Each structure stands twice: as C-alpha cells, then as structure tokens.
Image (cartoon, rainbow, N blue to C red):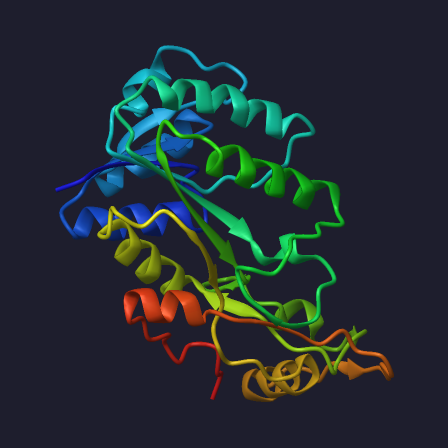
Length: 260
C-alpha cells in the first residue's frame, strides 16, 4: 500500500482518488471548501480543506505521504509563486515523488510529430506558468518528479462536441489530440505503481482524425446539428505522440474517443 496525496480533487482528481482507494492505496485528498470535503468523506478519502495561499500546519499532515499528485490548474496570477512555497513544504516532508499533471499546450505552435523532446514554446500566460512549474519540479533534487502532459480532456459531462455542435470549426483540417478520463486514471495509476519512473510523458490517445471529420462524426452519432467547417488553407498540423508512455508501460489506450 502506498500513501498518496492528491492536491485538487476535481474532475480528474476525485475519480483518480476513488480508483487508487479501490486498488488498496491510502489517499489524502484536498478541496477548497468544507462542502466539497463531505464528498471526499463519503468516498472514503481522507479529506483536507486547504488554501494554497495559507500553507498552515494542515499541509504537514496532508503531505505526510509517499507520493503527491498535483492536479490543480494555474488559475491565479501568482500561481507559480504559490507552487514555489508548496515545494518548500514538500522538501521537508516524507514525499519521495511528485506527479504533476501538465498540458500539451506547453508545445505552443510546434508542428509535426511532437514528442517529449520537442522544445516547449508556451504562448498563453497560464501555459507559461505551467511550463515554469514543470521546471521548478524537475530541477529539484530533494524528490523525484513525474510530468504528465495531458491532451484535451474528455469524459463524463465533458466533450467539445456539445460546444461545437452547430458552430464554426475554425481549423477543421487540424488534428485532434485528446485523452479520455479513463486513460488518464489508468496510466497515472500504472505510473504510480512504478516508483522508479521520474520522467516527462505525453498522454494523448493515438487516434488523430481531423477536427472536422471527428466532430462531425460525433454530432451525427449524438443526433446534434453538424458543425460548420470553415476553409483553412494553412492548417497547423500537430500530432502529439504517446509512443514513449506506451513503450515504458506497455500501455494500450482504450477505444474511447470513437462515438459509434
């Protein structure tokens, strides 16, 4: 049994925590409100109501684990500074490895086949913060760091088709780079069970149809209005490769992007 803390029990963190509990791990989970904490209690997760801007003694108990998984998005302007303070706490804790759920957005406008060796080139401020946090964690020698760069997240109650139905897709010839919640949880759990791994991994389903074809197919299956496919003479062709994680874990992605 591994003692795990999940910082951010939201859309990804909560079902991940439930799966880890089912597999026999002891799980600490964080929320930002007492009301959300009740959801954790009902699930059997050890709840902590934490404020990242106030790293009180509660954080010491929360971080009294072997593994920390950070699944919080950079919504605050001072998010990088907040993570720096958190790292100071981690350094004096029992944590052996930190897993950070990052984003393929760190590659910016890079084109072609994108691997973990592709240079990062973030364009948005929030993504620049993600890239800085990656480096802060990777450069720290007090603990191991595992970076998981997630594709566009889809799953229960979350799929771009519901937003794009009947609307214009500006770049219909570009490729989709998506990842289903099921694969997020499965791959993270497998990585958690391999404590020697401390690398950077892309986690994107290897199914890469064009956006126009994919979302039109999804709309047809769900009987929704078809999206409008605008001309795009210079598409930015980017295919995120997950070859590394497939080979490292012998991982097979689920057939969960095809709505048919």
